[in-house]
Image (cartoon, rainbow, N blue to C red; front, side, top):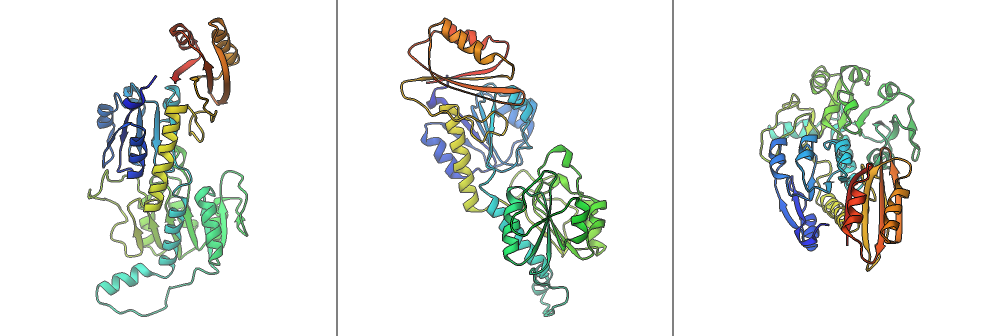
Length: 404
């Protein structure tokens, strides 16, 4: 059982103060670090930490999780969780939460702003003006109205971008490996090649799973329409930046906007290195798709609430890696949380142990997800340490937590 006043929280990468305030309001001991930590630094800091909060740069590897002797949950204060070894976290019974919706609008607005800026050649006009050159010409500048937007990845961000782009008068095409419902007048493409051949603007909104590394390179860029515009606000590893530079310098691609990179600096002020620096028809931003005050406040509050409810109630609603359960808490009850290997008979075995020790079950909920099961049991009255020892001793038990 974790003493609420002794819960230690480590927050990395300048997580929003609202998250700090929310966690401190519960009496938790919160340490906030400005930058990301590398594996060795995190291994040194993680012992004794119950809750870890990160953003996109910190890698929570198997070695980090092995060194985490007290960790119960990880909060990814962002959308993606590919920086976390989810399989190892699940084997340890560590819940992982993220913010799948909180910064969607911010990313979409940045994409739209960049689409308009590139279509109007604002980067080049701006650069010339700063050089003192007045170049008032319409050559190469276009309205976005009537142009075709190709969205690769039709998830939360892709769908919202689809709706707003259509409201601007764009014709929307999309491609996704999963079967997704088209919104508005958007047209689904059967293949990526079909989308690339038609789109005036191609924007990527895919996740960072290992299979997507190098997903977009010379072959895909060559299939884009001459003079098309390219955006990547998803994950840096999915695009070959050398190939992108070649497509830009050859004139095949008219412009690009890139917010994510294969290697990113750990903190503000660190040197940024990229093959795309120095190109006048490229907008480079430092992974700020979701970095608005509104989005970061929402993310901070959302993920901090998930972590708090998990510590206090064991609820796993919207957990990335564990089965989702939300059992309303009852007063004057003890709650036993049992993470286990998903095998037949676990529930019967747990209840048999409770019955043998005359422990009265007042509420119970079980859910399974892949290899693991998650069981919450509310009990009334007293119970002996032997009950917990028997539950921990089950061959299927991954982790047992007792909440009062």
